[in-house]
Amino acid sequence: MSARLLSRPAKETETDSIMSDTLEIRGRGRRPIEQILSPFQKFTHTQTASGILLLVCSAVALILANSTVAPWWNGLWEAKVTVGYNGYELSKPLLLWVNDGLMALFFFVVGLEIKREALVGELSSPRQAALPIAAAIGGMAAPALFYTFFNAGQAGAAGWGVPMATDIAFALGVLALMGSRVPPGLKIFLAALAIVDDLGAILVIAIFYTAELSLIALAVAAGVLAMLVAANILGVRSPLFYALFGLVLWVAFLKSGVHATIAGVLLALTIPARTVLDDEEFVDHGQELLGIFAASRGSGQEHVRDERQVAVIQALETACEHAMAPLQRLERDLHGVVAFFIMPVFALANAGIDLSGNLAAAVSSPVTHGVIAGLVLGKPLGILLASWIVVRMGWAVLPGGVTWAGVHAVGWLGGIGFTMALFIGGLAFAGTPPLLQVAKLGVLSGSAIAGVVGLVLLRQALAPRPKLP
Image (cartoon, rainbow, N blue to C red; front, top):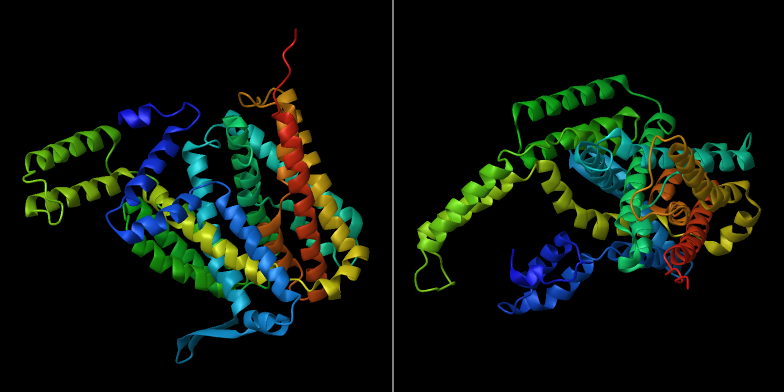
């Protein structure tokens, strides 16, 4: 590691330092385009960046939906888009291509995160996993109960799943606003909680928000899934292979009645998580190749490499690919696509609500009341109570540096439902647009309240304690 890396402040993590160095190298003044793009690249690597963009896109959608261009804006998402030819076609409104298609890739990345955490992360051992799993279960059950209290036996009863999910991008973005004052354990707790929460939301979608089933399509999906699992076992590592058969899996789920985004999660679970080269092999091979490269240096020209240097560079690229599992590589490569394209497009397509036509209805709607109560009361109460129980029973311990005040604040941040809440709302009220609109208003209002209160509580929990005389 370079002396410059070692000299950085202790509060900056080694990973952040490496990423910063990488961006610095990319932005060096060899090409003007790299100088232009460097600030944007640095922005996209900040924890708050995706949350800010999501917020901006939501605001844009709200403004356009309540402006003179509202008919054009709404018509845009209702326009039919057809893919295929000669009878083998899929024709759906643009909104459904976003919610069924792009969001399948979002769920694919969620599935990669869940698999990684289960293998090597915070969910890899029972004692580590106990606290975030309990918190997530409490944070899903309590909001559903609060919602049901307001809507049992009424037209909006099907929306009980809406306030159950946490938007990890917004929640971590708010947490990042406190900078280095946030204990690492608190960040890890919130991230693990949100991942388990996503898993719960996926199960809710698959079990409770599924249309009439097609057994033939499900049989095709099962066959494709079995083939993907076999490919993993046999050592197939090509992303193209998994992408092509993943597309077939998605179409099968689309025709099956089970929501198509579930295909993304199942595909993620088949992606190989093992490396070809272990640590020692990678280090030995890398050092050998770098030695060859160093010995082949001539005049120091960087315009064109000789054949030997090119061969060494290509061998290094192959070694790097073999030292990283396809799961990690795909998660890394797709993170930006999901955070800075798919989620903003989802917000543009789903956050637009006609306030003039729905605000009065929302004020008196039990659906709105249930969603807001679930997010701002059920989430923090469920997360805090479930966490306290498992710690009290001795099944888990609070992470180092984390206090109960911090857990309470995180509970409120868990009430930022946004992306997943809007998504489940679209499933729950697909056939009743008026209920969907008031549910969306409840999601936006509840998420805003939970975020602001969570930030205030977080500031108080992390405030320096006065020294006793």
